[in-house]
Image (cartoon, rainbow, N blue to C red; front, side, top):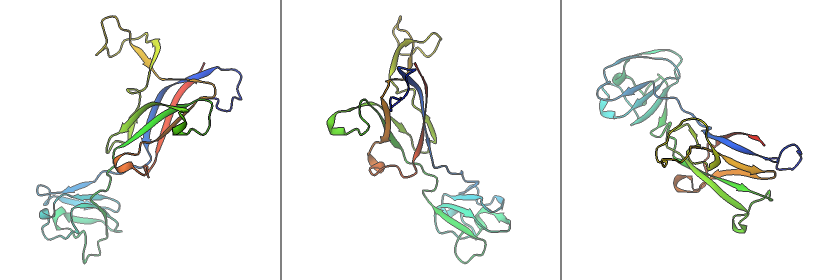
Length: 210
C-alpha cells in the first residue's frame, strides 16, 4: 500500500477481495474405460484422453495399467474402448500420463502483514499473520472472503445472518492497510507442500485507497 511512500494523496487503503487461482490446469478425460463402458464405440482424434480405471475391462486391447492415456496419432481411431491398443506393440500412438494426471494436491497459503520493513524476519516479530486459506484438492480457484478479517463498518444490505445475534449487524470483510504496509503471501510448509508448491498460483487482490 504505497510501500515506497511516494504518494501524498492517500492515507492508506483497504483490500476487500482476494482470490487464489492455480497456475496449472488439466483437461478432464474424454472417455472412461471400465467394465460398463468396455464395449462402447468411440472415435478418437489426436489429443483426446482416455481414463482406464480397471485393466479388467480390456477385451482384445492392451494397456500399461490403470491411468490416463493421450492419443497422439495423426489419424482417427474408430473402435470399442476395450479393444484398442493403448500400449505395447502398437502404431496407434498413445502417451501414458500415469495415474496421478490432473490431480491437484491441497495447499495452504498464509497471508501476513508487515509495517516499517521490506525484509520481514519471522524471529523478529515484525510481521503479523492475517489469515490462512487452504485450496482443496482438485480445486482451481478459491475466494478468501470467508476467512478475511471483519471490518468495523456494518453492511447496509441484507445477507447471510446465520450465527449472528438478534441485533448483531452484518459486516464487510477486508484488510485495512496504512501507507507503507505490505501484504505477503506464502505457501504454508505442511504435508505434501513441505518444499513449496511447484506449479505456483496467482493471487488477485482488489480494493482501493482512502
